[in-house]
Length: 389
View 1: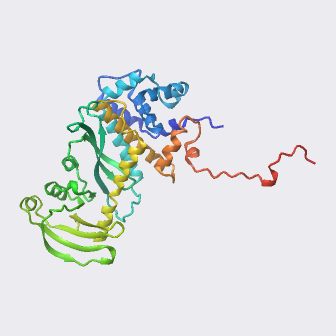
View 2: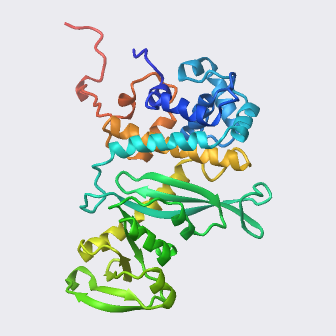
View 3: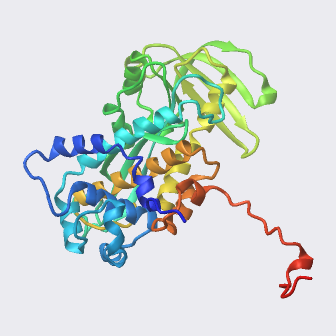
């Protein structure tokens, strides 16, 4: 019989506790909680994410039912609804945002060689945002429309492993393109964006930083063709052009040449016009890169369905951001677990298994590995023999 750690404890051993303590000290130099630490808060919220708890009372009831096991799970503090609510309300959400970045850096190293469907050696990111609707009367700080509240998750997703390397949480009124003012481009990397991010002044800043972008042209796009390059029209490509902008303000904002690629997708019967500042890759590779942008849409769909980020345990801005960042940490932690144990299952399957096995004392690999057990008793030997002669 296995007499080691609980499954939950084994998962949490992947957390770099030293880095977590550094994040705590960075934002809590004066107030040092003794009865319910920041680690206790993180572990309780992580438990809620892994087991799909719906409220603070739900978290309290489940953890108190396992009171004798909490110490061995790493939770030292007393579990109470009010204590957890106060912690979410008052403890700086940046503790968990910074710690999520530590986990993201670790996951990035593990997934550095992960394939995402396009043969490319450089980093490739998809930039997009998703809106989470909120009740304006409960979340008055999250203004979106006159009678509606919302928060936006602006996300830069590394396509190798679908790891969110950058997340900015804003109210619903912030336009997507404004995130380019915050983002620091990485030289040589590709940034895949939709039409909402077409702002030539900001794109030119990205070009000046030696980063590459792939986006779609807007309908009122005005340009002058300089060169046309041959394309294989059997692949769906229709044209590959070098051009310059002709509108007064766009030409002033982006004076350098751009590349315009027109592509017809026969599967969905839709025509796309791509703009990029990269002139070295083939036109078909550029089209494939934009198609890979769909990974960020799948990421948003996945976290909304399988993590607690649509319903919140608190109504303050600090509580909402704390919950979102801990949810991101749990997502990245499961991704690290998958790579560390070399599992073939999807993140969804791993989460489903963990949700019902956290309190078991079994090795994680044994719990998550697919069971190939077969009953070796022959069909003729099912009846028990009372006497052997």
